[in-house]
Length: 475
Image (cartoon, rainbow, N blue to C red; front, top):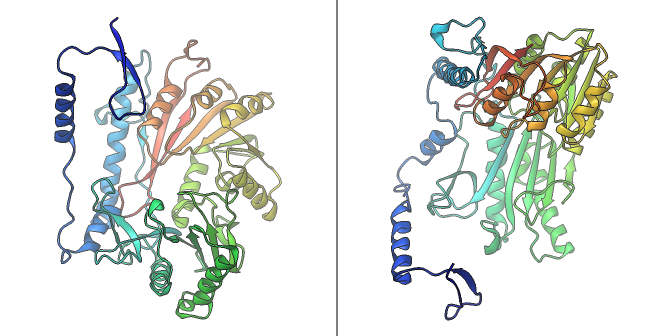
């Protein structure tokens, strides 16, 4: 090949590549023209007299329908997902997953009616508020983003009108904005541009107790200067106008990164209780600043009840809770089964699960830290001596790791599998196909395939298109 090495004038690097025939500059110019044509033109959000609140509502809570109509829309969406899944499964030779559902529906299983959320408005127990320029240009505006950074039309709009956010959260955000506008320090809009004050997180429980977490970029401030700022925000929410929020606890986190864990930068309790408690299905759960918890508490109770009913656990079964996070789902079913085995990657979440079990007097639970695909095979080997295992999986949007699916398929003791999906397409579809396909030695899927029997949609997110889908597999 006619290789050439040349260093362009004024460039610090040398490039090695094949020689190009023709005018190289002309080729680059044509490529740039194509790139410019393909770039989207900036979208302008319109004049200030337009309704910014309505636009934000269209983005965050787009289902502007009666709740009855919302449920119909979501049910039809879940039906379409199952219809597509049926077509995928039929392409696998010898797979017949249609059991009870009529063939005319084209569904791969029996689809139950959607379970509604007991709470329709203000159901979120956690809200995250950003700080940036508002429609009026004020950089100390607290709310939700509207627009995109790419199109350079990002605006921060107050969110006190959104139907899914409780009034308490909006109140805390409102007074955080008041505090920011009194503070001499600038907000941190973009990391390279400087600034200090960042996002606000509000947690509430069903009793109305409220925890607030303020994130702060320390920049070059000395420790004594940081202490002054912490004391200032503390006084504002205890003795100043922010005292009306009646916070149960206020945390402060110094973070020079976009996302920062407690291990990387500890949450500092400025005042109040170190945690708040939530009651769920007879359990007392403690909520820390970074604890994972379903955003709709009442809806989560319906979800966990549905999992328990579909799983059919009893005193002769072991419940295997994969991707258990803080273990709430498994703990809520512990009284009905002989043992609960939980697996979770996050160490802090496992510690929370163990604490919750001990605090609630639950002794038949074990929680293991690590990757499920590594822990599961060994854990199942020690439990396969005639014991019936019911597995429950509740993975993140990325779905289950392929080796986890292998371990589930190849464990003959697992006859029932309940799959909870917050995004029942994409990677979840791949997981379902791997669970239901014929045995395949090349893919190390040696166990008997599962059959998808039932599906139950559970609405945890009113006013949005999102929905949990609980799937029952048997073999």
